[in-house]
Image 1 (spheres, helix red, strand yellow):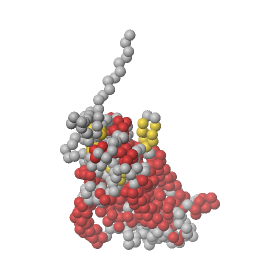
Image 2: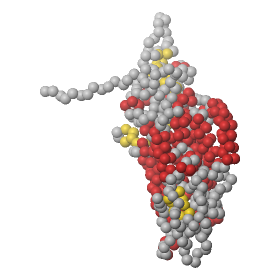
Image 3: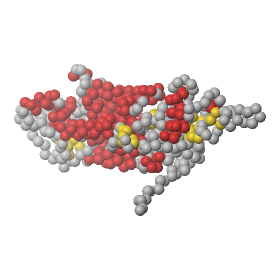
Image 4: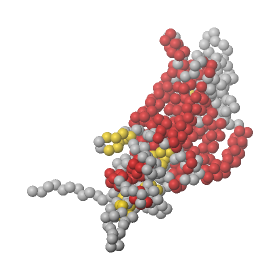
Length: 556
């Protein structure tokens, strides 16, 4: 059975087609694949920059197609297995990624060659070379050939140690770079956010720039998302076949972006082939086809052409030799304990306030991709990446920075976009009464508590506007004075704010208001009311919000 999706070159004598082939050979050879790549990239960029961005309206915060932001990452074949292994749980991403891996048995590495938006951007970056010889072309093999399997093994080891190794996947890297550097709100106002965003954007820029050294360098030698598909190469149904009609012109090897064609006998390294079929479109004698079984009868070469080369046997393996496999296994076993110890050094996970609906500390580190999607859709900018001082295992993970903003009561965008379930989806009604943390007054620096001056109670106003009324300012009066008779004057002293724990949800509106009012003016060194993580054993839900009774129709 044949599955030829390329446009054959034989018989195309038009001058326009010849010029088009010279300018854009891959478009001319395999236009269907290029159109599919373009459509996938356009859909991804629309989701990131338009569809997934949170907007404000008269009815409150809304997100346009925010849920769609999780789909591209779930399609990454590394995300589902790595996240499920790290958290020891079944995820939706595992089902989607498993479907992609099963599909790669029919269309080998089709995700890399037809879908991946990062691969399409790498292709575009490779076209920006200033002279033709800057980018080395389609030579197969090389010293870095098996590096991607080491990266894949390292990612799975990280997952086994409880840290989501899918952060090295193609789609998470692209999403993280775009979200933290381009879409994240107010990142330039926080040094930690700025540093994390620059690292994420710099990593993405390096991946694109190395394509000027060799075409598809990242995809060929580093990407673990492609390596996990290459492992299934021996089970592929459809493969590239070369018949005895081959005239050894070498055009197929020159156009191959992934180095999947041996330049000596023009056989196929199935573990590297992405089924782009551009080689079939440039073959002048039609000696290449993509089928489930070898061609029985070879076509005769064109008259006057060189003597045909012998039919070549394609390699179905991954390209890993026995020596490399043994070395890879030994290196993975030796690095396992080191990775576990390195991640164990990181602390601070219990000191961070996670977004609403976040999984427990044991599962969150294994499920979170550090992709920045929840950061990008947050309309208030309260969700920010954790700074590196919190430890390598927490760096880049989302947390609520209530110094800069507050979690809006009528927003649940972050609960709708997580691809792995690190932040579970929840309706807005449940999110409104979800307890994120607990506000505490720092009596050492609070103006009325320390007796320095009276306070304008910005914390109380912000909490009241948020609809929680968890701060009381009328029941506590400090630093009172006595009258001439020795009795306490009830009108003396200063009113001081008191947090009502049963009503506080930890949204951070009080802390942000206090900081903006007093820290910004240099009156206080930091906010006098701070939201802390919930103490151990504290129930995550406060008392249920009162339900308003439905209005009954008027009676005469």
